[in-house]
Amino acid sequence: DFVVTQSPDSLAVSLGERATINCKSSPGVLYDSNNKNYLAWYQQKPGQPPKLLIYWASTRESGVPDRFSGSGSGTDFTLTISSLQAEDVAVYYCQQYYSIPFTFGPGTKVDI
Amino acid sequence: QVQLQESGPGQVKPSQTLSLTCTVSGGSISSGDYYWNWIRQPAGKGLEWLGRIYSSGSIGYNPSLRSRVTISRDTSKNQFSLNLNSVTAADTAVYYCARGNTYGPPHDYWGQGTLVTVSS
Image (cartoon, rainbow over all chains, first blue to last red; front, top):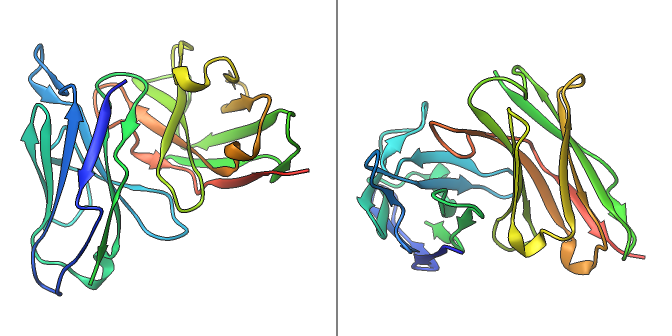
């Protein structure tokens, strides 16, 4: 199975500051034939299902604010929240969907 | 707008079978480049992908649960289902159904989730 890890486990960021979450997949999730990274990011607030933020490592889902961005390729990826808002307090998960079983990272809790 | 809704018993006894149904509205489970997933989350823990059924009917499972899990569908009702047998307390979790796109994101629409507790 693909192993997906995240760092840090949690972080506290001041309002308006940048938050950065890292995700590693072993093995890598870049599919050579289409040059796409099969890596997604989700936001989950208490009592709610996860919400898709980013797929193909850097494609923002429709309706997601542009302060959320994804980057990286192969094995190493980053989710950046450029200017943290109060409503961004949540747990963030990355997920590889290159191969089944799809696997999620353990999550990163973001607080103010 | 696609909507998914999980339904089923909130409590199951140990060693019995957990059965859940996901009802989909706003789109057909048997058409398009989509697949339909089950994912679970124990309280305070992370997410585990259980399996999926494609619009074509082909099915894939998480090998960690392969011997206990079955996914099926009823296209006439636009529903797909999860059966997990021989349950233990470790299967207590919120169970979600979600849509995946073969040429896009893996889980773009989610149900609200249903809590299943395994207890005698």
